[in-house]
Image (cartoon, rainbow over all chains, first blue to last red; front, side):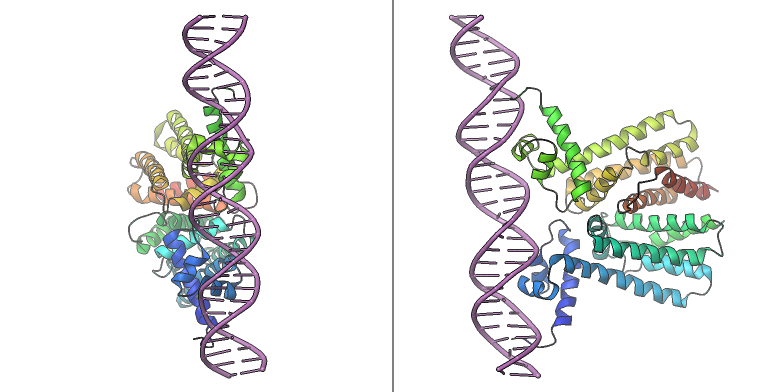
Length: 189
Length: 189
DNA sequence: TTTTATTGATTGACTGATCAATTAAGACAA
DNA sequence: TTGTCTTAATTGATCAGTCAATCAATAAAA
């Protein structure tokens, strides 16, 4: 019983199912059939809308990245002064919507994919560049070595994500944000 | 033309081939056939010595971890005083033998495996615990918040590994070690 | 009737693993 | 020394299963 206008709904459902499936099954054993079943449709329909498994995974990555970007942009818009901007950037990485088991697992697998998939690598490089640019902009008026500090902050955030990916207990974004902000404060002194 | 006493040689060749294959092909597309071909033997022989693909990957992980552990122990034995111990621990993570493309790619994939493979997870937890213990031992006489600092250092090291895994240029361990040591210095002040 | 949504069935390619069979080295006895 | 037996090394052939992708067919909306 096909209803028209299903394409955006189906695509969205598939993207969400892909992320959930990465978290639950892992990127190694991920299959189109499982994603499609989770999204409530046949594997053939998933191929119909996305063309290939790779494009589905890339769409999931784009989704995660765009959610993060929107949240970061929103927080930055409200921030007044360099200190507040730094806090906004760091906290955006650890909000409940970004620092969730599902999303964290997805990130880790995107890094693995980026190793050979040029599309995934480009997306991650965009994320790196934007994070770095945001950090530098806020750090320049405060630090005498903004590049070093930005590099360290970026690495620490990624490391906290990776480590969270194999923790059993619930993520504590507040703790992580505090750790990074503490590093920044000491780096500024 | 079977020569006897081949087992240790074959196992070693397979472990090395596994690591090289992870780096070149990626953990998603890794196959026993490719590993065996790279190690100069038939897939059946690889199964004969390791029993299963999982056990081969686990052996590769153990190898990487043991090389790192040996290097860290050696450096620690020569270190005099807490400051030197910290430097030894950090530098061990970024020596050319550990901070190589191959090994870095392997690490990233071990983190992915640990998501579902209890054996891999246990090995990583052992690594985490040992790194943390080493750092705490050296930090306690120097810092008033050794736990926080140890957590941050561990995360930053992991993050630098993950980021190195998708860089195109050659790794610069010296730069990375300097970044982490700079973080520690500032954290102590 | 044209277009969109949807799927069952199928294909072709691969994969991990198994096993029987082959080769040679070392041990031991005649 | 020679011949036999055991054991380790090694592989080709093969199996059973899985997966991404394709396609023809169906059903409903416009």
